[in-house]
Amino acid sequence: MDADCVLCKKLSTMSEIDVVWRFPHGIAVLGPWQYYHGYCMLIANSHATELSQLPDAARRAHFDEMCMLAHAIEKCFRPHKLNYELLGNQVPHLHWHLFPRYMEDPDRLQPVWLALDRAERDPELKRRLETGPTERAVTVAALQNQLKNINAVRA
Amino acid sequence: MDADCVLCKKLSTMSEIDVVWRFPHGIAVLGPWQYYHGYCMLIANSHATELSQLPDAARRAHFDEMCMLAHAIEKCFRPHKLNYELLGNQVPHLHWHLFPRYMEDPDRLQPVWLALDRAERDPELKRRLETGPTERAVTVAALQNQLKNINAVRA
Image (cartoon, rainbow over all chains, first blue to last red; front, top):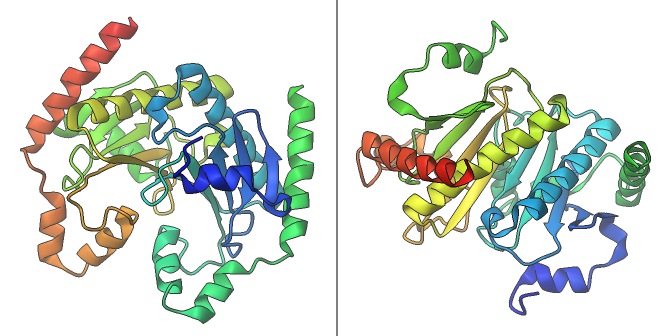
């Protein structure tokens, strides 16, 4: 834990409401932009700022967890495409953004960040991008059911 | 190979100039935006549109290759941060963008796509973002030397 890291603090005070799954090496939480229905972040448990700081085995386990989460999103919501992004420019603690993209999104050929940037100056767009087709709790429950199935098959 | 896929065609007609490394499962090429010095794309050899389409072993090997390339970029150019992005919204054939970020970039807290979007309407910015601190061939050679070292250690 790094006392100055926003995500380290968040991990220790996480509300269970948005927790999708606790993996051995990270925690999946439902992200704020549910126009991208099923958008999750996977936050590494340990404070590392780059993948190269993880030992090989831990990094591979981290990828396996990311792929399990991605698989659950695909099975639940059948997106047209899945976008994976590990940036950390503002918060340098390893966390992946998994953004499902859908055919009805007029901006589906662009990275989500262009629309999210516009949303900072447009409260109506912001509200629209925050709103999914179902309540957040319903989305979380669907992902959890899927992850239970995936884990049952792997166990 | 998918006859309609831009990247499948590119793989079969690739100019060697920008090839950084041929891995068993993918090919690393130097990307166009060398303001992000060392920016590479890692293109999967096989035509898959989502990570979940790869068998587990191939997907893990693909990640290992990506991490080897990332490590070479970090060792060569010491970026402040490394951004990993697998999108495929326009070209749905698995390819990673590895964007090194530097302290002197005034937009370093943002994803690169905001600046790249502005560059589409601003030829001067486009030219600036395409230009690295060294010739492209010098950048490629530095990465190749580093990858030779990394492979020698692993062999």
